[in-house]
Amino acid sequence: MESFWDSLPRPFFALAPLEDVTDAAFRRLIARYGKPDVMFTEFTSADGLVLADEKGQKKLRRKLLYSEAERPIVAQIFSSIPEHIETASRMVAELGFDGIDINMGCPDRAVEKGGCGAALIKNPKLARELVRAAKRSGLPVSVKTRIGYAKDELESWLPELLAEEPAAITLHARTRKEMSDVPARWERVKRAVEIRDSIQNPRGDASWVRTLIVGNGDTADIADARKKAEGTGCDGVLLGRAVFGNPWLFASPHNDIVSRYAPLARVEALLEHLALFAELLADTTPYASMKKHFKAYVSRWEGAKELRARLMNTRSCAEAEEVVGAARGMVSMFPDLASYAREGEKRD
Image (cartoon, rainbow, N blue to C red):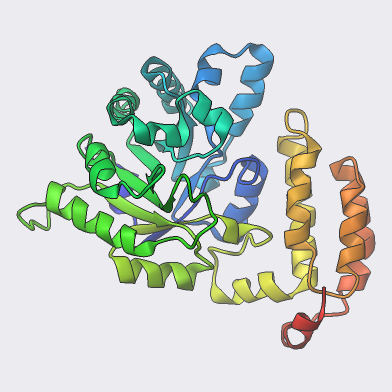
């Protein structure tokens, strides 16, 4: 059965799921400024969706809040219990999501302790059961994982996942042991494409149904993503950390320049981000999670460091909006993008 994955451009560029970053507020802002081809929610515990009390359910379901502007939108979930994955996947389907993604790459020790995330690389049999369980929801299922646990196991790990024919597999091109401490090895993404083609398309038939291979890791911007896709033959690229302070990441080149160099544009984007956080998440999500965005938005101009310090001392979106609003006059002294770009490297 065809899904949205089949109609995406090649290569496609997607927003990675980042815990406490790509929440409902930030995704909605990104969708307004320049929507990617696919968006993913933060990863959400399937165990919690099944077992949490009313208060816990409210908080977890807020992670699954989305707008129509974000489509296609995929809910990323995690668990090591197939029955919980199946139940949570059916819940996600009822909420109207376009797809389900199972996290099999998170290196967080608390996640791994429950046999989830990257721990599943060591348990291919269970990993395959989880994919089958999610498929029973009727939605297309994808997997986000790594090239191995303590060592590169791509040659044995990837075929296990491909045997279940998920719609897509995203490969963070590092092992769990490497975390993000070494450069992503994109040559392994290229090898993943070769493995996929040898298994799922042995006759070289262009019409053969196949799992999409998506690369992830150390991608600076869309130009870099396109280059990596061309060099590896992967079907798409997932961009994560590059989106910090840059809701224009997936937009036109002109807007990318705005996001990098124009202080006023970045301050106004931060104000909009704060307003969305207050509207959508303030009653379930600690305000402190918003603070991790401040340095990305407020940097590289005279007075930025002082403004960040004031923002870090705020206790609510309303306080932060007041501080930023008062600073707009300071940053409006750089209305010309070219003049700001010439001086940008000299500033904080």
